[in-house]
Length: 147
Image (cartoon, rainbow, N blue to C red):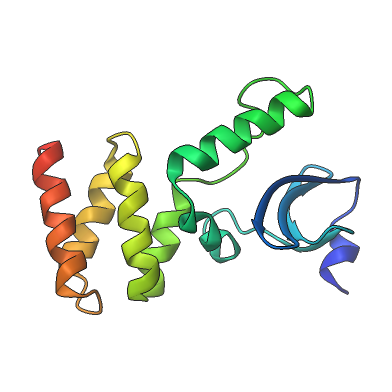
């Protein structure tokens, strides 16, 4: 059984992740696909397929999601609440790849203060696979928000 057999319903593209790679809705499920349809469902607890979002600013992603809600005449927050934005930097840190950790730090700097943000910053401070630059930046961000 392929992912497209599981993902049924109209394919509604909501956010371009990369050229011809989209985040969208297939029925009630969040998925990654192309212009023609969904390819795989997004795991909201570990959204590895959404890491390319980190290559854009957190504010830009928020603005694009809100604009798409308007375009689709959906209620404000309807799409926004489906996309696991907090889990994207978590997946980046869990990847132990410095490129994604550095980009996650950009997002964490822009995200509202929360226990998730603080936990991730602490995790980066202690992550031996992160570069010294990333660990120090995480410490500075933690200091700024008051641990």
